[in-house]
Image: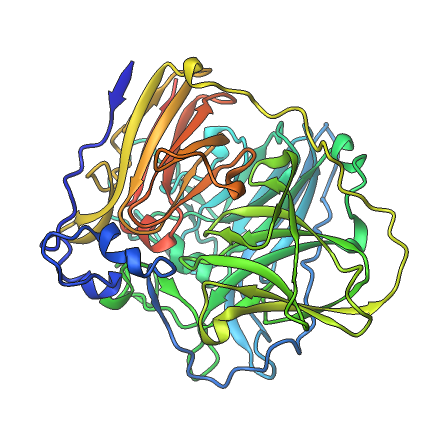
Length: 530
């Protein structure tokens, strides 16, 4: 059975008038956005330039986000309280930058949990705007998934109504001051992240600091012997830009982020920054042993794509041994020379510094960057040390083995530019997001194949479920598509097939583009699991 959900019309030059410059379109008649961008595959969006002097690379020590201690561990669950509040931090040396934060830090504190042990997080909103919290990659009940209209209104600021989005949603659940989110975490061990998901304002909220890590662990993974302790490094990579006063620059139409959503015309395809931050520090350096390290990498950028490589002072590239993807361990390691990572994707990678001389440096570089955005961070080998870690040939045996023949239906979706609210937008199946409309209804337990096609870069994320990539452009998936994912990066003009099983929970969920500006401008759709 095949079911078409794609009602989009081709994206012509005429339909893209006004955003052609932003998307880098050529003047050839009839070009689609994807075809026009084929010559510029690394760019979807426009870069903001900082107006404050930027520090030299590889001078700032890499910060490690603190692990949050639970308030209580009774009743078979770990319970936490997180306050969302304004704070300032010295991101650039000698400059204080105002931020929106979880618990006063950027990134927010890391939560570490055990597979199958529930976590309950009470979020208190002391910011001047409504918020929503989404645990990205979590197998979460619908009422705790962070639906974008389920607002938490500010506790200390007068704020009423719809929070600026202006959309009618009869199912929205509005809270004042606090909301309790319950995460069962009955899922494979992996790196998740939590971030704001407020309707129409996700992009600036993440940009201003509302993002943090959540790691799920279990005994089987810990028994593998992968690098651990100080040799396991979480790396949240995010680009930002700064104004002359050291504030985070963002081209919002409404700088208060309270009423009018959207960004200025040049940035409709996505906002890129000219400063690369890792764990909130610009181009940091980390001192390592001559040993294996496990890098838990998240691309938390709004729109920037990276292709990461580890390069020694002698120009030699160190292998990147991928052991995990968005939704946990691979069946077996995959070795890369470079690794592309789109917004919201996570990769679990082992790098071995054993052959790097003491005092030597290894740079983590971005092959898609230019100028200073080609550098991400550096590692400096400080000493020889014993290394009892290993990378087993078999990592996991619990990956689902869905087959095409298991699928009860096939659906088609296009991700393309279009019109929304009388202006420019980004559409799925030709439609902008409407919280009152059900776009897809799937039965609990059903296996489906989804065929996706893009005009420009679109990292497509499904809430609740993981999926496997079956093909790209009718050909086998790429090496970095291995494992179970929740975000797939579509390149300009590219199509892909994914397969998933809708299990876990019933209710209303989302699928959307995780270019955060695209998401805010309509590129979301509703998935109802019944």
